Image 1 (tube, one colour):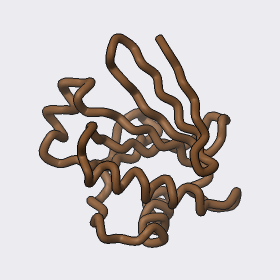
Image 2 (cartoon, one colour):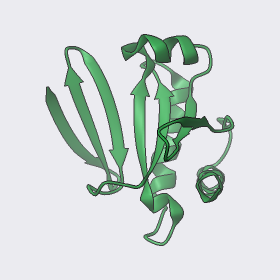
Image 3 (cartoon, one colour):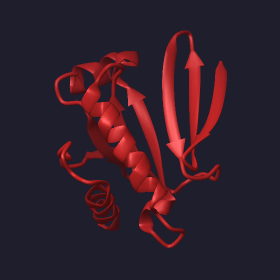
Length: 129
């Protein structure tokens, strides 16, 4: 397995590759985070790419006291898992919050027209519940 780490805009991005399958993850620090946000995406999806950019900007705005500072963003390529592809092929980009029991809660769809600050506030609200 090959793992590559890059820092872009203050965010650490890791790419793990195992026999042509990729798992991209992003976190604002190397420490393990207690909360997880999952973005289901796929290559060539312009809506997904736009949301990734806005999420990156939203996370870069978070301060150490901000609830988003403790959130680990994991980007999942649906083409690497048949279950994800069946579930999300017509819905991506999809954001889900990983709950403490290991299940996922799908978050309301974010409009591509929303600004970074609005997206940041919606995520803060989602993790306060």
